[in-house]
Image (cartoon, rainbow, N blue to C red; front, side, top):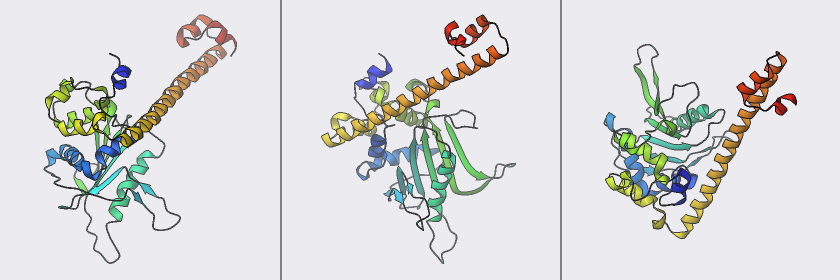
Length: 282
């Protein structure tokens, strides 16, 4: 069965849609899903989240000339007061890295009021990104902190940015060796699964599957999800079109340069895949 056919069965939501992501991780009634995710992401470090308090997703600037910030999910831990920001980013845009830094800095800076000591609680920002991070070697998790360049000693734990690159998630459920591997795999592939999937049968993420099952959703949410899914499909189609157009434009540019440099027609056709007529029109 093809990927498209699996998705069309619509057993579970696609967590990369805007509605599904916020529905699962940004809802008070489903905060146990977010808590499980956070505990998995930080379990090797001994950080345990028992509860979370959600905060306004829209943070206004201090003056009319400042920039409004809109988080997907922003919460704090009532016990230790850590701040957690969780974002889904499907497409890389110029300035994305700076926006990620700004999100974390704003959450840190807003902790203090005039006259208070500079005692800041850690801000953990997790971006689930559906692309490879530019200028960084491909891997499934980039953990960015303030540290000494030579010794790698941590300078401060106040700001921490984690970029989970979904394209580098494990390819199959069987390849997933850790709970972190598994939760990342599910976020990427949940919409392609059914109740015969090994991940579902394992019972390890029963709550996640139950909350993401379309049959368990009220009609209003199904409509909202369907609209969000269509927007995602349009976005991906536009990306594919731009990608293919870019490749075609590149072929024409290469052929034009080869032709100007006197390359034989056969070589140009072989190298670019363009026809004799297409090349003659350049």
